[in-house]
Image (cartoon, rainbow, N blue to C red):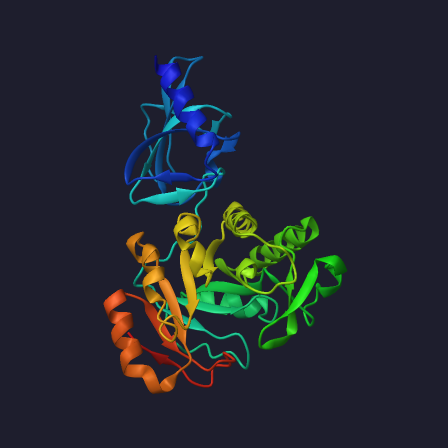
Length: 330
């Protein structure tokens, strides 16, 4: 019966990319061979049963127990107990990515000389334009770093621009003459996005903001469906989590109910201006922050009142995000 229970638990995990753990003890199955010394620091203890020696074994990075043998590795399919002190999501390597909460504060600047002086939890900055040394400097100041890149558009000034196949480049984005929509179904486009996520890891980013992930709702030049967009956005979330990167859902209000479980936070522009903020509440209800940016200075009082009521982290910023001014509603 014990073997049957472990088999059933493990089988159910096969259909979920990540482990969704609750605070306390959890019984799960290993999705691959694992070395426990590389597991998340948020895991306090492992217990596993050795069927060969008929003994229980344990592993902890902080607690020593002379009465039990050390559990150092897990085999694919092996059931084990795991203890965590808070609700936690882990990838199949038993590693966790940064997961902000609804009170997390932020600064968003994508152009201009970066102002590093704000006392906030997160800086959201450009992946390509920000040197690795700047990210390290922010980390030294106890800031988390979210790195911006466009996942759904071709930008003609990026260093990897020549890698995109011509047949995957579509119509110009409304209001952004140097950008064109991408065919998100294209396999080469997806490989380029994987490379951008790898760059985020190399630079030390804690998470990513993947922009323009709502091409299906725009005049992209491609026959993109709701399902095509869901598939691509879930692909981005899973690939980010594989690399221990958190990821935010940028705008894409029509798909929030389907995607809130895959993304770690939301980044929204102008939901107040367009009376769309209610659509973002599933993130708040899931304990995940909504980082909202507005560009209308004349509506500051109303915007900030709404932000407080909805528990959004709202900033009023210049449209070009150059850091020339910043009003924080909280």
